[in-house]
Image (cartoon, rainbow, N blue to C red; front, side):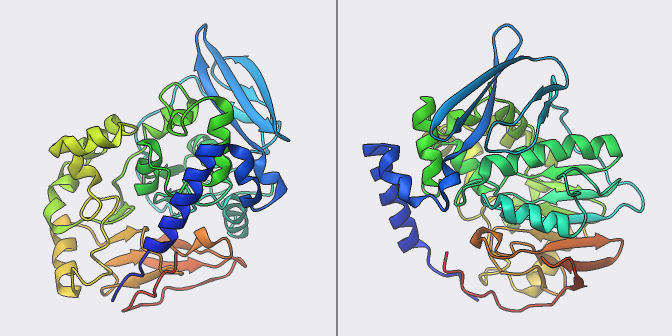
Length: 378
């Protein structure tokens, strides 16, 4: 099994972003997927005097509004995210446990494909026709990588932010786990950032990472998000658990707190501290590991690892399979179904001991068991 090389596309993206930064947003206008892609927002910041400052870019113009930062403050849409936003006074930390009989629905690697995300969630009645939570007391898990690549990152983040509040009120839960692209974007790596957001940051006079700083509503929320999540007998994370990092799962609360505390820390500072660098290492860390799919671990090795963790299975994204499928005798469930390509996607359903996948047309089918990983051209 092997993974396709990403070096050439990465180099092209990096070159494009350097041009954008050097000559301004106008040079990148032609790279937007549609004319409407230039619209962006809102970015909402907590300002002095207990106020919320919201800013959009609509038709190339800066639009601002200010609201009192009281609990449940509503921000009406101008452009970008199409629904009113309800902003709580504070973000509730912690992840709700799985109630007896509740189902789990999971997906990963949305990568700014907001329209496709909405289609998939509507098709399986996770959300209704107004994009509101419709799954009752069930749980939705997004296993990382909402950021980068596509033009709908802001919209996808706000949708999940709102669904989390709505699910909590209904007795369910939305869990958004941090992936490597969240950590990259917030420590200043622009390799995969859509040029639209380079232009937005330039227009707002901030770095891209600062659009999600601690003073922003989304930035504050992201700093409450975990990397590791156990629901019932299933462990969820973005990349995977390497054999040398079993202790990070044993101390899950401390590991999640470590990510939350360091999210947005400059990359150079992250690399300089061995204790922190371990969380972000591009080969073995929980947000990067690919060892279940590239031959580092065979099936007996995976079975032994899962047994040591005391779970029935591990669900991961990160490695693009192009479909939701099981590997290593069902001990690994891969859920990066290629949503980033903008054409299709799938959901994982866990209903007790029964696992299935949901397709874009709303149908369901059993999980296939795969042995090999298809090459990913991106």
